Length: 260
Ligand SMILES: Nc1ncnc2c1ncn2[C@@H]1O[C@H](COP(=O)(O)OP(=O)(O)O)[C@@H](O)[C@H]1O
Ligand SMILES: [Mg+2]
Image 1 (cartoon, rainbow, N blue to C red):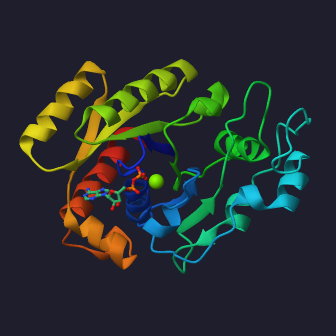
Image 2 (tube, rainbow, N blue to C red):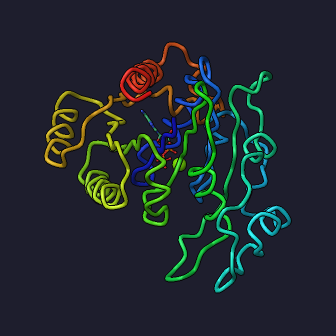
Image 3 (cartoon, rainbow, N blue to C red):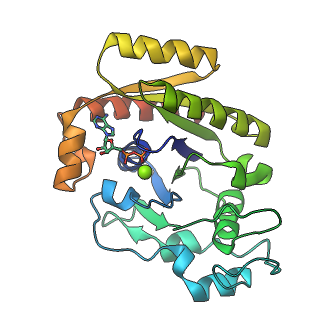
């Protein structure tokens, strides 16, 4: 299964993606891919050493796509670069058994007209052509802009989760993402409500999501454990009493029972 987590900046995409990755890796082999230029998925897993993103691996990019990073305009890229070995060879093992692996893409330029960024070619190839075994999941932490994925990549995404919080801004972004996702052919688009502190807030967001025709996969309370985890530099799974963690566990169950 290939799952993408998206939404407005600051809504909790990385927290959700990182926590889901930890939870799902109990039963699946998970490739967590950080495709947000902000690059903090590693941090949400408790990894704070600097990691070299794939977009900075000049030799690899040149070898696989035929282009120097950053100098892609007008260059002819290999459009089907070999990628099958990348998840294993470039990822960081999060746990000793390697059930959770992390790949950091780095800045994946969206590119203007006719411009194809090599890192973006690699990411798209990973999503499109990586053949997953039955017990493998790709979990992508990405920014709100998804148009650069294009139709053929979007079609490979089995589930797109748009994270929203109580407030019109993230809901407006969600509306835009949903439209884009439909336009480029993502199969399933659902919402997760994060940072909920009251029933009124949840009702408000639910009403808006209904207007957007977005199904709700689950909601996560505003939880000081999330802030504590961020200050401590630990993943959410280190806080077993956290209501937010329990909510994400429920979301993971929902994903597995409805979309796998
Ligand atoms: N459920 C929550 N309760 C409290 N704080 C949260 C919650 N989810 C996320 N946060 C906080 O919100 C901020 C943004 O979260 P993050 O996951 O980095 O968002 P994004 O990846 O969408 O930019 C972080 O400081 C995080 O600790
Ligand atoms: Mg993030």
